[in-house]
Image 1 (cartoon, rainbow, N blue to C red):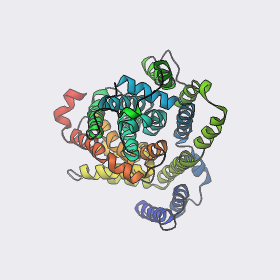
Image 2: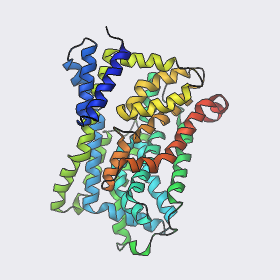
Image 3: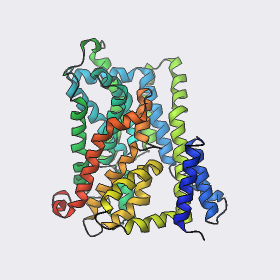
Image 4: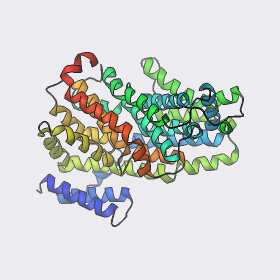
Amino acid sequence: MIHPGIIFAVAVVVFLVSAFPLRWPLPVAFLIAAVVAALLAGFGVPIRHLVEGGFGFFNLVLLLFAGTFFGQVMRQSGAADAAADGLERLAGHRVWLLLTLVGALLFATGMFVGIAGIAVLATGVFAVPALQRAGLSAHQTAAFIAVLATFGMVAPPMNISAMVLADGVNMPYSNVARALLALSLPPALFSVWYFARRLPARVPAAETMARSWPASAAGLLPLAVVIGFWVAVRLFPETIPDPSSALVLVVGALVAVPSMKREGWRKVFRNSCSGVPLFLAAVLITVGVVVQIMTLTGIRGWLVIQAMSLASPWIYPSLFVSLPLFGGVLTSIGSSGVLGIPLAFAFIHQEMILNVAALSAVASLAEFIPPTAIAAALASFVVGGTSIGKVFRAALIPMLVMGGLAVLMLIFAAQISQFLT
C-alpha cells in the first residue's frame, strides 16, 4: 500500500500537468487525478465511487442552474434595469447610499441561501446596472458583488460551511449568530466604504432613470418574492415547508414572465445552460468525485492527522493558507469538511463555537481562489465578462479584513467568548 501522502503528491502533480501545460479542461484534470489516485491506492477504476462522488455537490449544481435562470429572466425581462432605477430613487441619487442598498440586498440573499455563488446569480443582475451607474468599473462591480455575497454567506442563519463544521465536531448549530455577525457585518460595512470612497458623491445626471415609481418597484418584485419566502421559511420552519432554494428561484423568475418578450426566452435558456454556468457545474461534479476518492484512498484521513498535529503559532498562518487554497479546488464548503473539521479539533481547548465561526470565515476566502473561484467567476459572468485576476485584486483588501478578524477571533477566543457566545 502506497502511503497516502505520496498518492496525494502524485495526484496533485497529475492535476497541475493536466490543467496547465496540457491545458485540458479543469473537470477532465480533476477526473484524471482522481483515477490516478485510486489506481495508486490499489482500487483500480472504482466506477461506483466515481458515480457516487459525482452526486456529492448535485444540490449546488441545481442551485447554480436555477440561480442562473432567475438572473437571466430578470435581465431579459428588463426587471434588473427597473430595479436599478428603484434603488437609485430610494438612494436619492447618493452614491454611498446606493452602494449600501445594493450591498444590503446581496448580503441578505447570501444570509438566507448560504451560498455566495447563488447570491451572486440571484441578486447580481439587479446590482450590476446600479453599481455601474454609480461609477464602478466592470471588475470593481464584480468584486463588490462577490465580496458582499460572500460576507452574507458567512453571516447567520444559513452559513453552510459552519453547519458542515458543526456537524463534523458534533456541535449543535446554535448560539453562533453573534460570532458570525461579528465576522461578517463589520467587513461588509467596510467594503461599502472601501468601494465608495473614490466615487463621486452623486450618480451622474445622465444616468438617471426615466421609469415611473410603479415600474421601478415592479422590477424588485421577483427578488422580493424570493427573499421574502426565504425569510418566512427561516422564521416559521415548522409551519412553512422549505421546497429547496432552487425551486424558490424558479418560482421567483416566473413572477417576471409577463414582461418577457418571446425572443428573450432563447437567450435565457442559452445563457443558463451553457458557458460559465455549465463549466462550473462540471467542476462541481468532478470536485465531488475528488472528495470521494480522497476519502476512499486515505488521503483525507492523512490530511486530518497532519492538520491536527500542527502546533502554535504555526497553525495560524497555515490555516490562513491551507483552507483557501484547498477551497480553491474543493470549494469553500468542501474545504470546511476536509480540512476545517480537524483544524477545529486542533483548537479544542477553547470555545468551539468561535472555532467553527472563524474557520468558516477563513474557508470563505476560497470563493476568490482559482481554479474554482466560484463567487468571483460568477460575478464576472453576471457583469458580462472580466478578468478573474482583476476581480481578485479589487476584492483582496475586504477579504483580508474578514480573514484577519477570523484569525484574531481564534487567537483571543478566551477573552471574547463571553461576549460572542
